Amino acid sequence: MQVVERQRNYLRNPLPPGDGICAVCRSNAGNGFEVCYQCGQHRSASGGLQADIVAPIAYSVKGSQHDHSLIAYKAMHRSNVAVQNLSSLTVLYLAYHWDCFSAALGGPFTHIVTVPSTRGRQGEHPLETFVAKRLNLPALRAVSNSAYSADDRSFHSDRFYLAEGSAVGSRVLLLDDTWTTGGRVQSLAFALKAAGAVAVAAVVIGRRVNPDFGPSKPLVDRLRTAPEFDLSRCALDDE
Image (cartoon, rainbow, N blue to C red; front, top):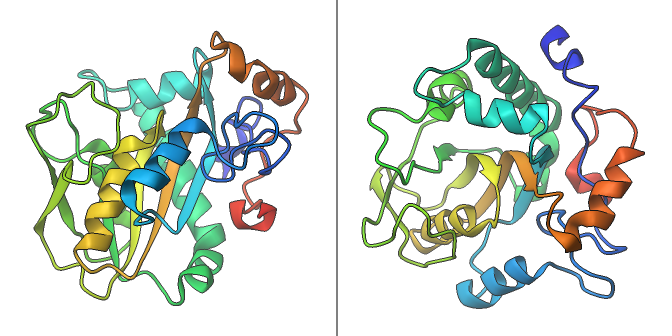
């Protein structure tokens, strides 16, 4: 808990949906819109086969300490401090909200999966090493379709496929470190649903926000006056 406490001064909880905040990813949706443009595109392209729950743990404002940690924990020369900060934050967040997520999905999680690297990183993804293996759930392994470039952040129904494990009848905890457009997370959620998963909860460590992007300015302004991070606050309570 002390590791999370030292992060509270720069972490900020996702804002509640509505009032210009996307009901899915908690980015800027624009006044009068339920979801942002990208989440609307995902919803349309996927035919509704998306994550049942999307829970960003905190905002990752470009250039902030949290943003830096999300880069440094998986760098070639990774920061051990960043690894400790992010792994403790994620594991404790899941511990706080495990029962709530399970209730919303109709039962406890049966499997876990991480969004695979699209940049050819060898070996396990750091998120799998430092978080997923601590949760004592059977793992599904997803593989990226090499037909899509590493920089492609759009939704694709064939972006990922399962290489190990069966998703039939599963309730899956899907982990990713950063949500920028959400295309990769929702592409993997689609693959899981298409493979027979009955429910998917996507938990992401940071919902990335670019303060230099004009439409994000109202959101960033609200974060400047938002209260300090509260680990016990559940994303589902805002809905």
